[in-house]
Figure (cartoon, rainbow, N blue to C red):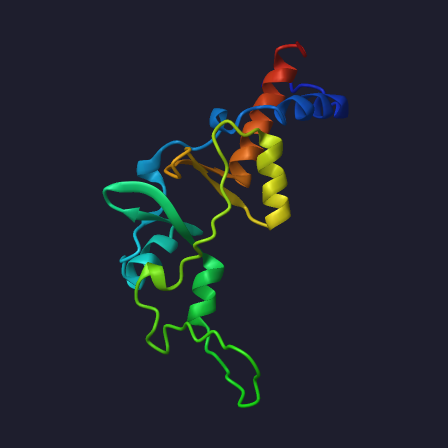
Length: 174
């Protein structure tokens, strides 16, 4: 059994300060082929299929384009799956998007089109602040034209931070 490095809080502080300055492109997931992707005309049943394995689906403009135009999360599906109790005295607009009402058939019917994104050259501190500010767990990484080139999740950030901290401790805090 290998000798476990001594846990030192100063190590965490040192590594974290440097980790903040790392560009997103250094740790983001770049495997577009392995990301949950759909298109505006993707049927809701296919969205359910994707969501059985993932917590979100990126919506691209078309099969020929990588331009990001939306996202669907588990919460979005919950909103259209739950029964709506419409009260007769409600004032103002009522959001009647519902699978039950038959007006949610394709991805475009429920996707959120105002997607918070980051650039590959943005740093980890920018990503973390966006995630905290908007209360989101994942960010699409897009190029200057808005094309999806990767994604960054809280889980990815945690995994990469732990790897760097472990490497820092093993290599003798250089």
